[in-house]
Length: 207
Image 1 (cartoon, rainbow, N blue to C red):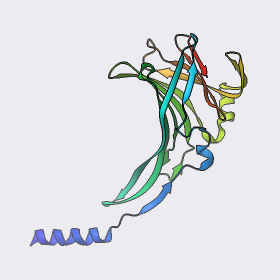
Image 2: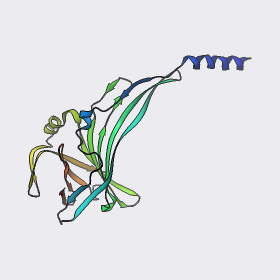
Image 3: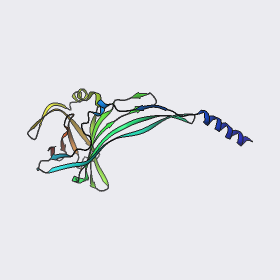
Image 4: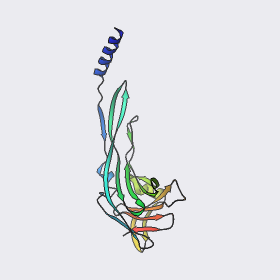
């Protein structure tokens, strides 16, 4: 009898408990526009030895996650566009270049943080082990102001006898500083990635 009572009670409680979609958190068009790539481009760079490195087979996707807020077994949820990822691959060291816009949302406070644009260069030195470089990020709504405040914005810069304007010089970091990794990534909102300086002194520029 007690068991039947518990089953009936659970049925009543579950019938009263209906989860709902609280909100869908999306990137705005202006936030996504800081990345000039569609993912269909072919990126070419020339290095110090006049070798051309090509990145292709790209794609750009928005990843969506579900954040649940549970109370008494009833889970209301947010659908959040968590990241906008643009990926390009190359035969060179089986490496890839990524441009990522991250969208963070605190489900407890209800505060949506400003999306951040950041970059990564990864390669397989010894498969299946990946050596990755992450490049510092900036909030998409105030890139220039923040870059100026930390000294990584240049009104103009000369790379391999070509002048570029309004350039962000993102510093790189790697968990394995003794391996080849990116030192600086040069980026323009209009032209995308215009250069990569590596830890061995090799400079790639847009070709």
